[in-house]
Image 1 (cartoon, helix red, strand yellow):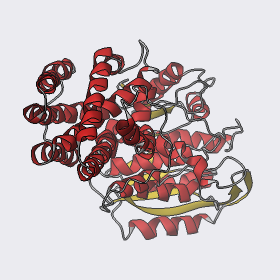
Image 2 (tube, rainbow, N blue to C red):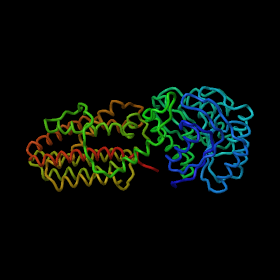
Image 3 (tube, helix red, strand yellow):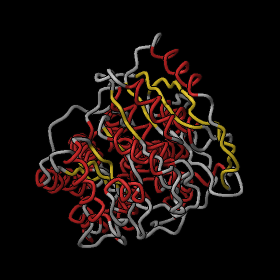
Image 4 (cartoon, one colour):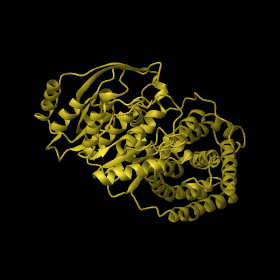
Length: 502
């Protein structure tokens, strides 16, 4: 996708920044575009409601539009609040002849309260404008107005309405499930040929969803303007907005229905790119592990994992995998990288077999290396995992494990491989509590609860405990550092699927 796509928002304002052109510009920037804006109406509003609206003269609106188009090549246009019949006419006239520019219309016609925002004449003109754009993003009440029917009571009914409108007017309709009741807030792209691409999204329990319609349509326009295919653009915009809604409460903006956190994803990516050497302060108490430590040394290791454990469990990948909201693209990325990881992880385990101090441990590590390749590889083959190159995160983790097992003491090596046993088992224990027959990744989650893996984890813990007991103080310090570094690599490994920017 092209970066810095030039995106024009045509909409009203929101002084508190959560909706209108202010939200559009934030969304465009978050989606990788360069935002421009033309103001159709000056709205005195905040998180508690609209106080008044001032519509500038139509001649000034024309001057705004032409001042942009006379100077800048526009890749996509998002159209929001038009307000009245004259404004619809002015914008529609300016749009004529812009057939090569992607047009996304958010037909602002009905408030979430159900109040009609336009006069009948303006509604008719908006309906006509819908037939001259590429994509429309109505809420369910607006979709009902467009098809002149009752509001859909469920998602399937909304899709059926969208199919009727899309086929009749040769336009793509985005169905938004956010206003429905229940635990899902899915979106779907309904094409003129009747095809439906549904994007799962779990509902977030928050009142702070002001401007979500503006934000979704602007992000979608940006991805389309940058060259993304429609389904990919909707996937990206849906998951980005879900993250923005998830962290909306943290903004603490306003006393009413507040805005979403448009830039949470960008801040997360910036944190991920930080090259400051890892340190491991413990700010969080580690919960009692499902698989108990096997002595004082492994108890201390777990206690040092408290903050890392919290960071792992709060990762978008883990929370989405738990809810079933994880996209197939992210899941397959994870599986492909995991297959590569296991190939080299097995080498690290095999190396431990060659330096183990007892025949029993030699045999056990060799068996673990074999099972790593056979049992896990078979699971990956069952999902038709594609062959890919290792990501930088995967390469860094496996290089670290090979280095620790091939160049350092046995105690350091066993400490380095322990998190893949222990953290993986603990995460699995948490995930399996949410597994059910209808979960999209049911069969994968079942493997997490394998009692044989839990027993292998206990064995690894006993080996680490003994190795620490027999090691010198300086070796134990290096081994502790290796365990924490490997735990951080586990965090990064789980996180990487949610960092894909394409």
